[in-house]
Amino acid sequence: MLMTEKSSKSKDKKRDKLSSFQIITDQRNIKFQNPRKDVHTAEMIISGCGWIDTNDGVVLIDTLMSENAARMVYKKIHEISGKIKYVIYTHGHVDHISGCKVFMDDNPEVIANKYVSERLDGYKMLAQHRNRISAQQFNLPESNMEKMAEEISSNWVYPTKTFIGEMTFSLGEKTFELHSARAETDDACWIWVPEIKTAIVGDLISGVFPNIGNPWKPTRFALPWIKALEEVRAKEPELLLAKGAGIACQGDDVMAILNANIEAIRSLHDQVVDCINKDMHITEMIHAVKLPDHLKDNPYLMSLYSKPEFFVYNVYRWYHGYFDHNPAHLLPRPEKEVNTELFNLIKDPNKILDRARELLKQKQAQLALEILDVLIQADPENIEAIKLRIKILKKLGSRDYCLMSRNAWVYFINKDKEFLQSREQSI
Ligand SMILES: [Zn+2]
Image (cartoon, rainbow, N blue to C red; front, top):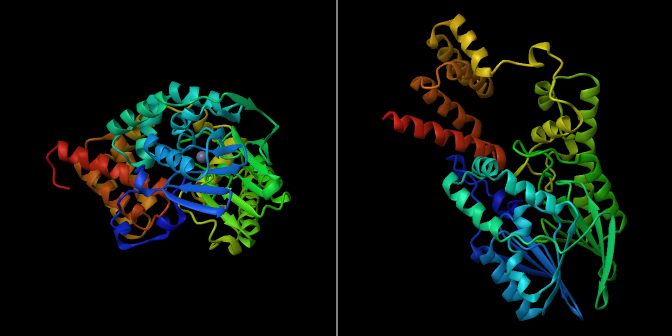
């Protein structure tokens, strides 16, 4: 799931007013491109799809997020290409599979990694939780999310044919080699079409810093991700479709984007492994692990969706249990209980408020937030503490252009504002 690079690069003044990044599923925002005469892409803000013409019909890769958008693409495919014979899901994220119902009018085979069905079942099982975290990650009203999620999931099309490992089929004059992978998800599939030296890699490449870490989601797969990208690179593609299949890379850009992603993932992964072996605490690790200097400003690795700190947490969780080797944390008491004990020792809320204000002034907003949390956990309705937390969160979000963290700051600012309004307090 990704923003377009172009839209997310515009660090205009509006952003500094700390608005969230919103998902736009309006079909008017679809951008169609035609990187080769027989290859087409459709790109939206957070999702993309592509299709390949053969002399015996069309192979569609991914299906966008909404039925409205899918309908536009369906119409376009029938105007310029023909009937859809196969749909391939690059993975089971909802922005890749949710428009499929529209394309079923052509009665295509729907092919996917074997684990896509399991993912969709899991989404249904965790619907309430997923609505909550989607509201935080994308900063949409929770009531809307529930309605939207219900509508979308009732239309999901499960794969009609699944595979694991490799699978090949031919249509017309072209061959489609499908490879399963674990990367952003455990149900990924990338596709190689040898006759036109084209690779379609789903979200293995997204045009920005790879989505290996997400604070709300299960662990992703750094090492197998590298392996999959190395296999793609070994094919020496002339054309690479990424982000679903919505963006196209050609010429020297193909190797440049592959190399940047492989090198970044390898470097960050190996640093985390080294830190784990040295028994560094995770809260130190997220500040210690960095992208190598020569990759920091790489145009393909901008932290506009995920960021290296989230990557570190993810790889840590993949290899490491929850226990951080502090005996106080093996079977901890609820944090509210511990913070209430601490607060009862401090006694005076002003001591905490003053110190948090001081830290904020000293540009230590995160530390201020954590110190203030002792008071908020002990006294969740402390008006002064909530007002101060809004200021701190605004500071944290003010220059944060990463969608996930920025939207989290804005979400919790809004929650605190709602609380103050409910107590008829000015903000
Ligand atoms: Zn994805």
